[in-house]
Picture 1 (cartoon, rainbow, N blue to C red):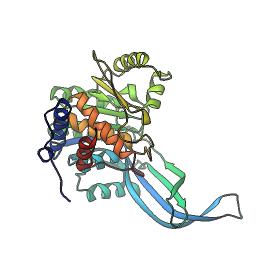
Picture 2 (cartoon, rainbow, N blue to C red):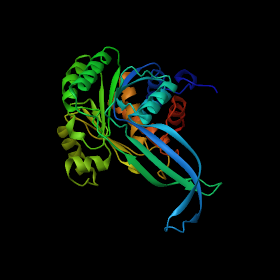
Picture 3 (spheres, rainbow, N blue to C red):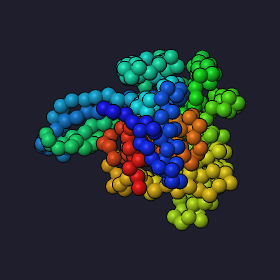
Picture 4 (cartoon, rainbow, N blue to C red):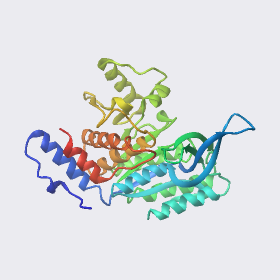
Length: 350
């Protein structure tokens, strides 16, 4: 396989091609950037089988088991996305001293990612999501059930001290920090309040993707919520017309105290809000007939943050994230995007 860089495309000097060349150069700079991911690490288990009959015991399908696999979920998906883009991710979080926790550490090690700041806690049961997929022998398997094993990271002085020490160490080496909060309490509000000024002082971008606590971590460089998360946080329905969208942006920027907010809207694309600037609306890249949105938010924040780490503007970071989001939602299941796929998307777009 041949990987092309910006110099291999020989785009012209029109304003559009200058922008494309700039984006291509930013992708070329992704390699080796250190991006810390502080968040909730979840073990994703997939069980595959075939279904041909109904049980006599109850009106339920009988699944004939065929195979299973384990993948990194939650904040772990951001690790995989960053790694696929050529970056050097640094996980920061907590797993239990249980089978699921050991499996997460094994999967991280397999990706040749450091486990130095992936802490283990004996009293914590690692979150695990089991998805059962079924179908006929030669058909695409469909998810028929999901079982979640959930637990919150305990509040202990010793564990909090370790997390704080880890983040203070990381700030000396990281080019960016992603906060990937799935509400299992790996991300502590009081620790965040302590470390944010130190990251800001060093000019390290801090991005936030929070499932239920969007307004609990104020002052990030950028937040990347989706529409349901915004509706829940602001307790309002999202508007449809452009004028109201502008007002929504002002509300979001004020509520989050972020320098920018990237609102992801599924098949409607994205909107970037910045203080004092007109919102930048980006239609979804590629087809609006989306295959699977699973993990797309992790891809978006990974690309956006990595772009900021190499010096991209918010606008360029949003454009790159939009390309990545459009690519990944056309893939089945939790997926990643490669630098080459991003380059090809940029070059091929009219």
